[in-house]
Length: 354
Image (tube, rainbow, N blue to C red; front, top):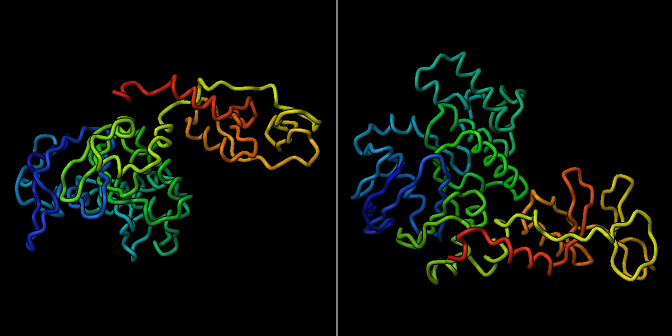
């Protein structure tokens, strides 16, 4: 556990970045620090590995005061991932990943072998081992940064806006990969982001910081979205926090209508979904059936995707209905926004409204 007790950081110019912060970060979970510019989230993160020292108060890791530890030794035992990956340009990808094991004096052959395994674990092919950072895309470099942070198998990882420098498609892929890794690794992770969507997607716990480094609310994503503690937190979460909340509601109990899934184009009074020989959505037939099938929008996998994905599907389809498919992409039913709302009322996460 990482514990902050009455921690303050005041810079020489008098700026108070963090003000009397007390916080307990649990083991094996992802805790996300989020807030507006100037709220002290990066300062808070960097005080954990003593990139910045606190002015007063105590920070402990598993009961050990970080101020009593040699900074280089402390940092070698903590994984650190930053926005631009921070790779060493003159070293190969393999040796970048093995940087910390080299510093710790590990056998170089074993360190490189372990680094190669880590590369594959974060989705990088072995053929990248002899390349240099400039030969990789931004998303690939970020994967190298994550692998390097994991190389010494640290119990704690610090991540400072690790996915913000890549495009939205790559960012989603990196987030999903990161969550997959964490299910296996169970690291104690502290992450900084300015993006509330990223915070609620990745965080087991989310700490919303106000300007001046004070806690606005420290809670699970579900409770945060359901019950903001005050006006500041509510405003920071934005007007669409209700839509975000749908991400935590499963779609397995969503009522579905399979009756309007058809295999041939024919006239009808209602919207119908045309499917191909494999049962996959291929087009929408308008009421009356007088025109060619309209393009299919997004579908969602029932039981796996959330109600937010179902609502997104409904909005993007011309009929205003969500297309539910199974794991093979075969259409299994349709659901309107009324059914989605009904499912939400019956499936509010436990404790979310308390």
